[in-house]
Length: 94
Image (cartoon, rainbow, N blue to C red; front, top):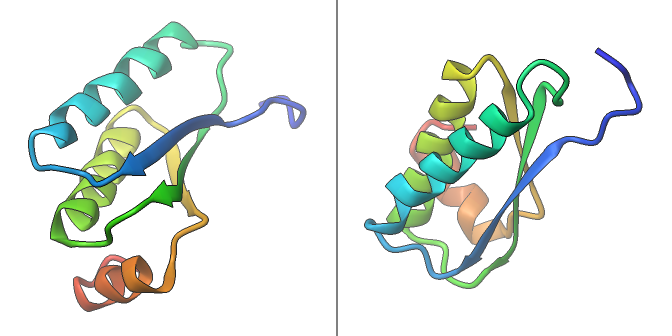
């Protein structure tokens, strides 16, 4: 992999509802497919604009991580607030 490639970035914005999670995963899948072969191996899930850290947000991160792994990519969570990090830790997802 070329070290100058920028990671694929997927932002979590606002409050995540359970119905949003399959859409986020589909978006990740579509963007990864669009960059297949020459795209980055890293996916960044940016939580800077997430307004509510709740179980739906935890499920979104977990499902996005699983989707990324199924696509042969690594997912890194960035800009997560302390509430989301605490919930992820309690759920055993850190």
